[in-house]
Image (cartoon, rainbow, N blue to C red):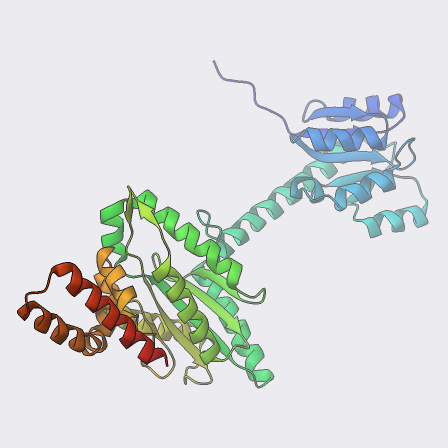
Length: 379
């Protein structure tokens, strides 16, 4: 057996029981209804009853009049209330009508309106409201990703285009960054989709907390993210990207009791430093630099000069810590430098072993020598 079709609900607010009864009689075959005797009760009904889709209200009422109710509706933080069609019952007072128009009334009706005309007005306003809701939802889908809440690639390109246009008029500049986790596929296969999704969320939250209000964060391709930063020199973005890289490298994140080996790479592009003509080209250039950074071993930033931005060489103590934690990959960009630093220690180890000293003594001598080397480097 088919369930009865639910009718759209109309809220009728008037202190006259006779007026409410007349309106109900004219709409009840086509619409569900709810009635209240004053503006305050009408407002409470709107807040508590999400099924209401349209309001018919009188102007003159006790407690809260029609103007007050209309003002609350248009000032509501709830979109379903704020955008709701409001039909106001009015006479020939032009001053009152102008005031209601200023407050955002949708249309006016008289108390003696016929059934056909009333139904036509209500039907027209409901159709318009539904069309506007669909348009707004479509616009939001184009602007924000439904799963992450971040801007879509299309909207990020639009933001970059607007920033470039503004920069050309005001002799300014625009920087963009494209960034992502290194070895993302391996990370997902090793730790699962849910774990990687949580990592991405934490990373996104950290990014959002460090960006300026005028910057835009959104999706680029797959798991990669893009940031559009108007008015920012490329070297400032490269420095920012370097700090992000260091933060991820040193983050203590574990899975099943084992520390995760995490790193990110970043590609930076800038206009006018890079000779590109469109927002799409600027983003693609940053994306290509990210790809180059990851193919070169990851854990690096490639900026506008097309070379990896220098990253600090870890101390020997830090290098040993990375090895113990299974993060040898983070040492790849610095292996030659570290080898040069360790040669004196290796020679010392060889000499001490030949002398047949106990391993504990050799270890202490190596540690003392490492500290001397690091102190000399800092000095």
